[in-house]
Length: 171
Image: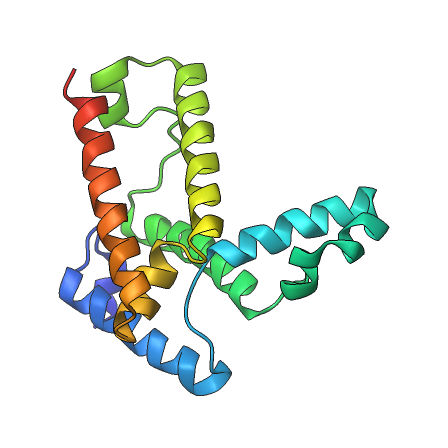
């Protein structure tokens, strides 16, 4: 069983079952769904409060989502840390500024890669806040609760993702 930790790829069925168990634990112990986008909003509030603490305290959004480190914020940290540990254990760790797929389609321009990633990240963040949930929030938690809003959001994620990939990588 420990050999699994050293594999470069895991079975999607095993990973899916693990995410399902994590979701059960999330509801059992915190009565909250899994999701990541709120942690990023909280982080921006924490950064903004360094410079303008009174402004952050008076924002309606931050009254609802207090800028603090809480379990979902630690989950995002754990995802990053776990990915690093997994890549080191599997021997696949590498620092790459331009992934091979991107390089094959657009060349090895680091600035272009950075700008496209930045714009894409901003658009995803805005979309996650606008739809009141990210891909993990809607796709895992919302779909497991048979939420119609999550079903519509997930269909939108797939349509937008496939459409964007077709536009960007068909050139």
